[in-house]
Image 1: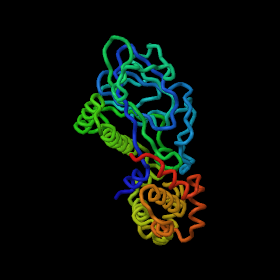
Image 2: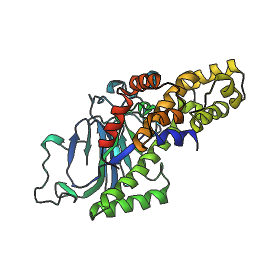
Image 3: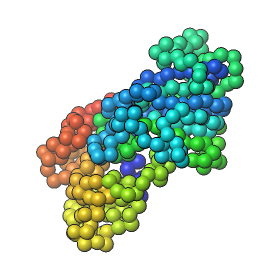
Image 4: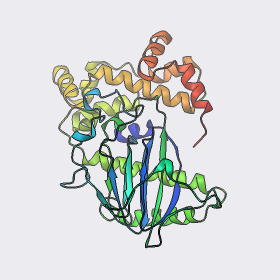
Length: 346
């Protein structure tokens, strides 16, 4: 398993809530900030997207795992969109097959044209006679735009490096970013299920939308600079990536600098400096946090005793494990497990 797959597996995408929108021109909606990763997929028609000028990033989705690279910057200083060559955070035209993802859930607007008046989400009223699982109808009498919208749920207490690195939004062009045949088949499936909700459709949509999120995350990772300062840069370094792979494959092993440097084919001194340069943490810090990630994953997914859990992730002392777990995740392992068990299954 490659290091990126390992990291994506620990992201804990626990489900999504898709809604099908049938919007007739003119239409314009402002969506309030959400403590979740939002998405909009254009099935048919066209539209426009823009972040609110003073959008604030909700707390809870930004990791402290890479504090030097956190993306909770003020909107006035937003960087260029890494997925749009030469693009900036202006109004973005959306075409059929496009996907917009807002990793940190900032307030934003969707509309058919830049000059269309905007209705706040809080003022939006759904037709009371509409079927709860059916499409939302809104707008005037003009051409129709069809969207699948919703949000992904993550474990908000879990620190995670990928979310902390993501920009305020990602724009994936349907005909350029994703494999066209795969995208067309996925969107056709989403459109069919969203238009004709049946028993089990919610679970099917969850899985397909989860696959879209992974595709978006993978493309984002591929677009990033490999110059250093985060673990993504290390994935492009053949030596350091071998050490990361060793840690990921066997976190329970009592790794030391000599062993990891040997895996990387480097001297201890050069390995330690290069690892810190690329990853932004020392090998010991990275190993400790990866073990906590793995412990959180097992607490969510398996009914291990604490002693067996410590064996699996490489901690010798329950007291030190509990202290570190609470430091990173904000609660004890027992409290984390109870909360995970109370959450609905994806």
